[in-house]
Length: 120
Image (cartoon, rainbow, N blue to C red; front, side):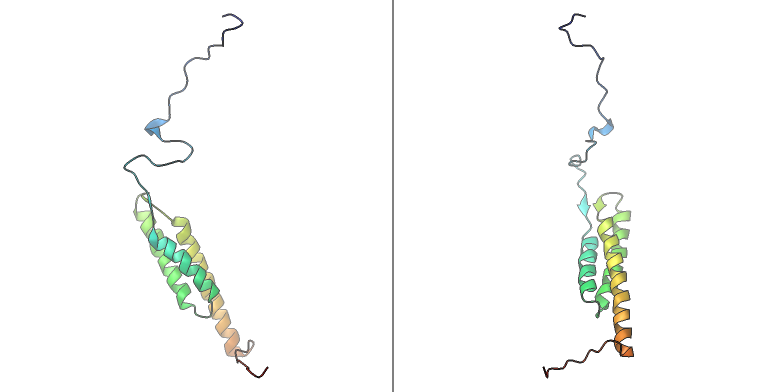
């Protein structure tokens, strides 16, 4: 080996099995993963339910949709994503229900006055 010649380090390592990129990227052709629509709706309804905590029926719907979305993602065998959104919908739904119940209790006990006085 001369001074001008690059050192010989041997052969490069083989590519990872399956040809998948180790950095994410697009899934291989024929294996398109789709998002669970129920999980997305659960998260959106959970946000709406949190904003309208006085009507906690919306938050109950977010919680139910979240559990159904997580079940759908789990049963898809990795072909559907959205487990995190379903979990967010469950959490937002439960928080909305708790805030709705607290709101109703405060109004029922008279701590919060919900009368609308227009004589300003």
